[in-house]
Image (cartoon, rainbow, N blue to C red):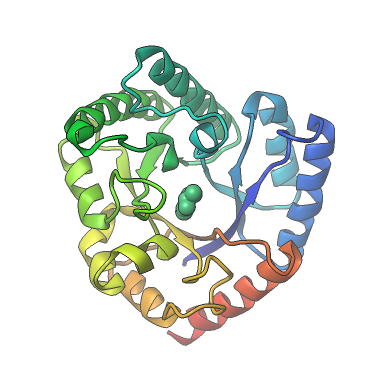
Length: 273
Ligand code: LER
Ligand code: MN
């Protein structure tokens, strides 16, 4: 049984922690009412948000925590775990480990390694950056292993990063790692830009795919762009994918409407494919 979750960015970057948790509470009540199975969180500052409070909140709605994202560490603070400057890299790794700790305490089985790898400023430095990224991921994977958690590396489109754009790139990266708890997250929005054929890439990813982000070609809810989600679900069925389908979409026209549209559309496809 595939489960559905919805990705939420928490607001403790701009609001006091209590107000950010209140906002999260309201959003979780909407997801629970719409009968989502879980939520995915993209925290700004895990320490401020508080793992005990968040974990209790999620449980109180009977939801699961599908995964925790770390992209904000790079997007808002400019910290990358592949940075050639050791002090920046170490600060980024420390932050990712804090996110890992938060995710583990809240019961998430998965930590996402996406945009936190940053970008290579000059292609001649590509090998160096990939090597540093590899070393950092191995260190974080070690801590994840101690918590029985997995890391998922997300191929991201070329306009956001120039490191690991396709499933094939992610497979290549993952294959030479010392740890076997580093897997792949696929995001249909990025796949639509980078893959020659989304279904072929999903089949190629096979059982290394452990998490899925759903968004249409324009980052709106599935069904509001031109990706063929019936084919996506069919391909995920073919590889026996049984994890979460987590919507990571723009909250347009509103959070409630994006969530409602997502669940209606995906449930319809899940029952008819
Ligand atoms: C994160 O999951 C993602 O998909 C990126 O597009 C964020 O910039
Ligand atoms: Mn994504």
